[in-house]
Image 1 (tube, rainbow, N blue to C red):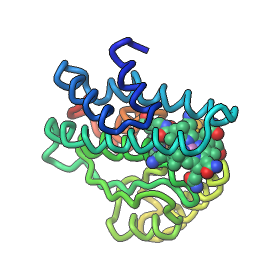
Image 2: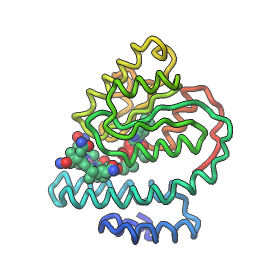
Image 3: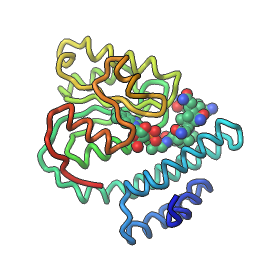
Image 4: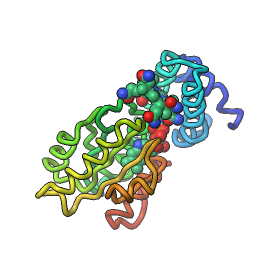
Length: 222
Ligand code: B12
């Protein structure tokens, strides 16, 4: 990790929201983009914490305070990203959520924010979203895209169920494009489970959305 990110990583590991916000403001003032912070520091730091959690070197409270710092950082940088929003014409409507049984929202929020900044009207159902609610919202909004995030193996059957239910829906089933992502999801999983696309990060999600809807150029924001 680049040395300039060490204080940010420290604030996440230490669960220090005030320090995290202060460091982010300094980095922004120095010209570092929020996306760079996420890919260069926040995601790798969370990945290491996830491994330490799996090996019982840290426990749930440590993971929770790290998550709280990252959520606060997301709230801090979201307005900055939206300022750069050059997309006044909507590229499409997308329903997004973390699937049933899963409360992880950091990655889902990144995807939702980057899609919004790049021209999509986002309908975010939050976390723990049931297949029924997701499909009902997609139908009500006549959405072009359904974006499903999942980090928990036990929730993968619900992601699959959501895809099946969306495909079977009389109104949107034939047209809606379904994108999936998150830790246990792979491009192979996406293909085997009848999703249209997979991406492993937020900008990848935007690119995939453009590709699936046949939109030519990316508009903004990095
Ligand atoms: C932070 C964290 C938490 C925080 C979550 C805070 C929050 N608000 O989200 C807290 C402490 C609450 C938490 C709780 C739990 N967690 Co947790 N957590 C993590 C950790 C460390 C990081 C996740 C994260 O935010 N990563 C950073 C983001 C930016 O990455 P991301 O989510 O992958 O998203 C990116 C891409 O995947 C992609 N993407 C994501 N979604 C989508 C969607 C689409 C459509 C597309 C195209 C792309 C895309 O783009 C994103 C941006 O780049 C992971 C470890 C890991 N390596 O993932 C464990 C991890 C996911 N947790 C785990 C577990 C077990 C739990 C608990 C069950 C622990 C417990 N005993 O209670 C609970 C779950 C409760 C529940 N029902 O959900 C396991 C899951 C194992 C599994 N695969 O089944 C992991 C893998 C840790 C581990 N190694 O054991 N956790």
